[in-house]
Image (cartoon, rainbow, N blue to C red):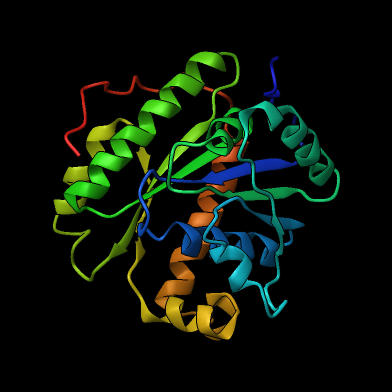
Length: 242
């Protein structure tokens, strides 16, 4: 059954955030980017499919500008029903941000098939880089299945310390994937404080570097969504070592 959709101008958009390794800042980016999109005027929901439920916990005070829905999918046989439920949310929201678990799973396969944009957070540790390579192989499978309307992919350097990005080291490690690499979401203790307060960083530290990083990412996503579909570079299929 073909479950992906052609993109239609003005239609709700699905942004998927995932990497096949935990600790890459995935949920932090999902929650804060979704909140930034909501703050920019989009009706936004964060769809928490991760068993760790970080996004759900972050929203427990109901203080985020984006709604949150727990939406697990553990059985591939239920993928059709999961997509139908997702379609219901598409009638209520204009931006759906899916926070994926950090493992190969039915929800990863299903979410990639319906995504308009896939965000892949990655630090520059060798383990993270190898996990990003594995994630991109699944993206490659999705592109082959969705040749007429492939998802757009953004590599998001995450947890980057001051000076790491500008010295070329981070760029050198992540640019080799053949995907667009956006400006980094830098390491900042304000993200931890935002989690503790059950708010997003734009609420507790408006105008800070952390807030600016998230806004820049949200605006780049919006810019990408306006671009016409295009053929993306081929992904390397060389074996991972991690």
